[in-house]
Image (cartoon, rainbow, N blue to C red; front, side, top):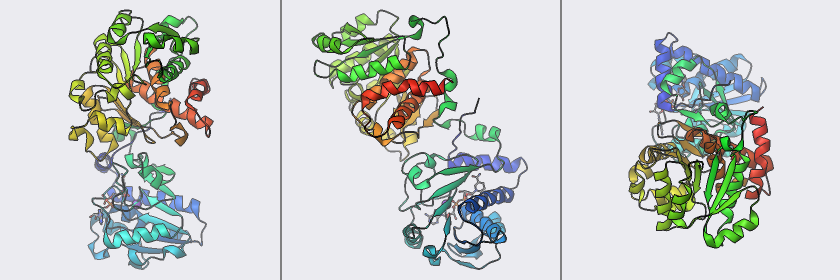
Length: 495
Ligand SMILES: NC(=O)C1=CN([C@@H]2O[C@H](COP(=O)(O)OP(=O)(O)OC[C@H]3O[C@@H](n4cnc5c(N)ncnc54)[C@H](O)[C@@H]3O)[C@@H](O)[C@H]2O)[C@@H](O)CC1
Ligand SMILES: [K+]
């Protein structure tokens, strides 16, 4: 089984680095390995004889640049190096690394970015501490304007390693070589777009150390959850595969629930029922076949249905209406302690009332699936949840606050569990931004939970499968297609 891909934050990586040094590999040796990895990668991009320009910063990111520059000269490249600031100010390992370079040290500001075959960006890495301004800013702008291929060392300079945000201005890299693990900025937008394809170089920091210092943040891919996906045995029957209930909106707002229901069925929920307001029974009945239908008049109706313990997973929110009745249905669901997915109107009905959800979901597996707008409305008046610059941090805090798995949607969907585990998704496609796409996602997650998949894994798997299905279709995708594409994705996963 492949191990899940760990993502370490800059400060976690610093600790892993320190621990590795304590275990006997020197700091300068780690830097040399990093420099080697950069040189090796550059060699894949341009052939010996080519011109390479290295822009080095004052910290260890610059040191990696110095070491790579020296190696590349030895391999027959024409290398020019420019430093930000004066070389007299380099200290410790950085001063040591600079000694490898015996060529001229120019000023980073003066480098001929337009007249080179490759730029190596070694200005700043994980030590970026403030926005880029003045001469540094101009240097980065000139680098970007050159139109030449840019290889970023560790991360594109100007991108915040934790948040993926641009600090004033940032290098638009063609590719990035990073060390030991990817950092959050390689997966979170806009950092992901600025990084280009990212190669992770092994510089000898062991998995045990990485797990001890990080261990809570992952790239969302099948290695994280494939082992808990339901694999029905020969003797399984539908009642063992769970029963998902999806609440429908009124007569003119029923499609969302059916999309969710269909998705729950496709992902393997043994039975799926749409709980419909009496006035919408006709329209729902006209469109449902394998999915069953039951009348459900508001919170009381839901309470009655949930007396039957076989309904073990529930979707509330899609087109349900923004009002007190929806809040009351959420309260019924919470009280019934079923696996629960809340989206759309079920979240927006609590606009400005998030305190009512404080700790509310601690007692049953629950997944909340807001996009940024819904998140901001839901947690209005809670700056501690809204203000962190990092999407990771916002999702993590909201998960702890509510006791639910918080799935914050976007091109870089973040899934955070109250216990701290967090994953960042990256297989999304812009074609998923289509009406009803979110309803389908709810159904996938609830359908997995109905089959006993824990909330965090169900949310992660649901997001990934949803995105994979969308990507496999591409242009022209509509939400109705998504559930029909799920079997193809599952077939690959369950091989
Ligand atoms: N385990 C790892 O990840 C390893 C990382 N190494 C490298 O070490 C780097 C981190 O090194 P450092 O901690 O020295 O940090 P950086 O080299 O990223 O930057 C720190 C320096 O930049 C200055 N600085 C920060 N923001 C600035 C701004 N906006 N404008 C002007 N100056 C600014 C700081 O004063 C400091 O001198 C990594 O990115 C990576 O390249 C490798 O050398 C070895 C192993
Ligand atoms: K860099």
